Image (cartoon, rainbow, N blue to C red):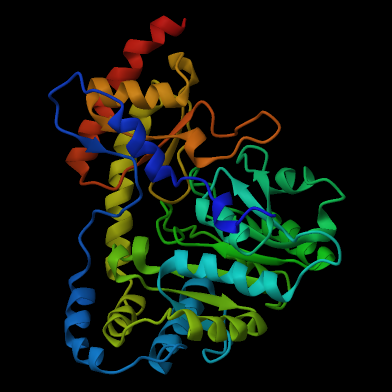
Length: 408
């Protein structure tokens, strides 16, 4: 008897970290500081909260699975302004969703059940390290994850070129994340060109997770999304799907609001799928979402706050760890091998001595052929207020300095 699909799932990194913390007695009275999870802590814009209240009367009606015309039109207008992609059909090429996770999971169920290889299980390319939902979505759709070891120094092409020839005929979906979690690396046009050419050659779909796309540091160089890349390369939107949300852009993770845009045929099946699983945004959430997508001032202020924190943190962290200034996002990906500790031990001892929580890199990646690309790294999320982030960084630097002589 084959193993039930749900039994193939691994514990979520949150659970692993909680278990590690439970086994780690504190040796300090310092107050806790968490750099562990990417939950935005900046204030949700008043205009979003106000719009949510103004549309609260809508909870007395069943919402449409496809979302309101007004919401889809607001999203299409935002995509045109932000990405320069005009001509999207709001009725056919956009589906509002309950946050990015909803879309990322659901798309695998829709794409893989309609497009299976002749022989063997379908294969889903999953960035490694990366968001564990990609893997879970593949497994619960009856597919096999194939892990793309993403190294920003080598580029996306190197990760694709490492895929064996015998795997390509079964590849049906690729999850790509730009800006990348955890490194903050942004894919340039040549990266997208390589990925789109492979998708066309082998007939697989690309799902581009762009939930960090609005948290960039250079106001003159916003990250290039897959839809804009396809347009620049003269390609249509077949087999291309972009996912974005308001969680990071607008500091509204509890709103659970985002969208999928792209391939109209896939989105038609997605609407049908969602009509059965109940994934519908309430009218109040839709009203608040329209307000958020129509305003950029709060997003610019959000970026300013992150720029200030990273400008302080990165030079300090570079004194004790190898890392590059990320191009976007709110994570820093620290190479801590100079400490002489592995990433799990570093996380445990940092928590015990400084009461600062980070995430071990091995919790965010999978070991394949004896190698885990997250090993020797920890991820920190600079999501808290500036003063708390500064205190946490200073504690982390003091901890790492104390360990470095032991590694020499």
